[in-house]
Image (tube, rainbow, N blue to C red; front, side, top):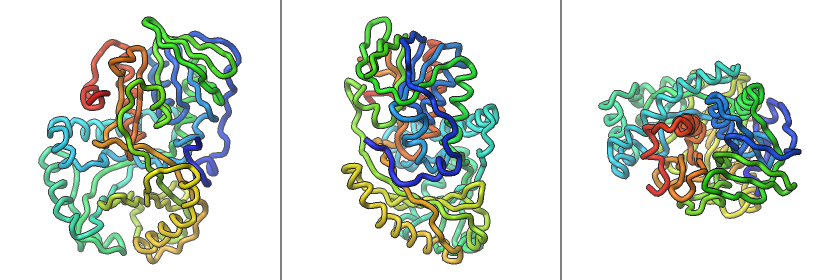
Length: 399
């Protein structure tokens, strides 16, 4: 099925950066990655840097699935408050998750620098109370994070009035980043190819034979790929590869990008914005001076039902823009929608299932998918070395 529809901004901005041909011969490698998006890119680069021969397969053109539709906000905050996550999995485990996502941001910056991705940009992130009932939970969240050493600030109503036109009682100010996920994925894959990795688009997997000592993959075109370990990194399309798939919820999200803006009245700092309502709306800017607004998620039913909602969801998002930025004239350049998965604790499933020892899964679900992908690459590196990783217990299958 189609993972996204409409006109995502990044392929329009960057164009068709590079195409990778289908596999035209049998292949034997140390490691094969199914999934040619940003997650697969991080994982494949980690593999070749670890000295593994690697091949990447995707049923689409490379980076043309969910990655092309990502709004690419890199935040350490998980879609569950630290307070709520502590109630679910214990405060120690919740802190491990939050610190891991916070700390990996600087390592993503280093990776972007290594491959020449110039669109990485540190930004202030403002998480504001959507409603009066959200104020107390937001203050409790702030106090818990501050007590554990997170670099944050509480913005009160008067502080916020100096920055924005919309009214809210309080907000948490933290540090985040943003990228062009589509462009970065291509740069990572270019680096993988330069290091000897094989990358192939438009390859449909027909069967996977999980043996005790290796894995054999056969494609619809009759090609065979043998590998010691198979890495699955194709979003919620990974679920059919699992013998015991975890419970996830599928949702459709919507976003638009504006034409380049001449004025930023009421948003002069061009902060990343998101709110306490669930589902929440979020906003960011682009290096060429556009605004992006997304959210208004709905449960996924089918691609046709998702796509039919694009006009009405765009209208709702336009109304939300006018509430947030009443002095910034709005001219929408394009609108798109995508489907994503969420877990009950907002954490990913990363690692090797007990009943599939030769497969490594990176199910980087939720609003932190890119951040989780970078952690997944580090977990894969540890696994290839026969080492443990601090996050393997909290991201494990069967939890």
